[in-house]
Image (cartoon, rainbow, N blue to C red):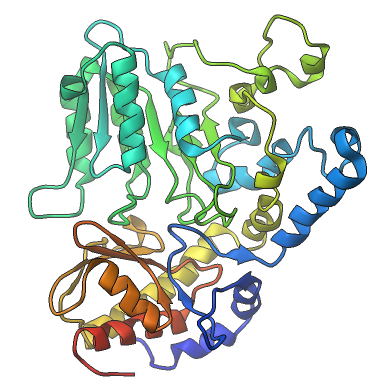
Length: 424
């Protein structure tokens, strides 16, 4: 059982200063809310305004000359962030590109990695997958003349369970064998918060000759990653959750330098993927930039990328292992409170083991608790921001950059009262 005075640790350094560097929404009295929705949209870092303002000032002073005279360079605005981003993924900087949005990047990488030929046309995915991923994969199958009813293999939890057994995925990959053209999974599941082990899944995919890709939307900045060590061929992510890049922030992609033998080479190209040294000679022939930058097609959205210049350096100062330890301390504290005072109608579906989860906790909700929008409104009245996913899942996240023990106390107390109990 965790000590009841753990919230006092929120005032200790470096966590107090770090949390204070983010701006929390406030209630009508000016009290900061317990913001537990970082899995959907991270908070605003106080340094973002200066980064965006710097580019607005350069735009105003320099106009088009900003491409030559701005600092950081607009020409390499996202490229120069790669050394900060690569350690979060466990890859080399040249294997990373910051560009586009998650689903757009997924389509670009599917154009490179999904080439159904003969009997090898199926895509295997985990379930429940984020709907946007499934829409993209289904559309690619149809684009190539396939039938999703037969060419999409979905492996989910056993009936009555929420946790997906990774071994069931590896067995399904082996069973599909040479029919597989691609394996695609979510690193941290958007609904349950389960963190899948990527290395055994990559090995299973490669054993049957299929490339292995991962959606890292809920994983990057949340859990330690080692994509190169694990053998992940390609990945995509967004930057507005745990990277705190702001609504609609620029996304990113990873392509492993050493892809499996026989991986197809065709890809979609555009001028920002042309080699930098000759790009502005405006020649008719495409000369691909080395590494992941070759997948860039358009000019970098400077204003949508600017927040990352404020937030990515945080992960150099606070490495993921340290953040993960902070997050686990808070979640373990909350688990102790829940064990001592369970909430009627609430059941956690996120794995208990630290290696199998990140900052997100998901709960199945039933009577006597309110459900759906009623629950979110009721929590709002207690000064708490969480979210709801149909049919009956309440999600919260303890992002260690700004969440602490007091957030856990406030949420648990509110849930006790909403269930008809009472407590601090």
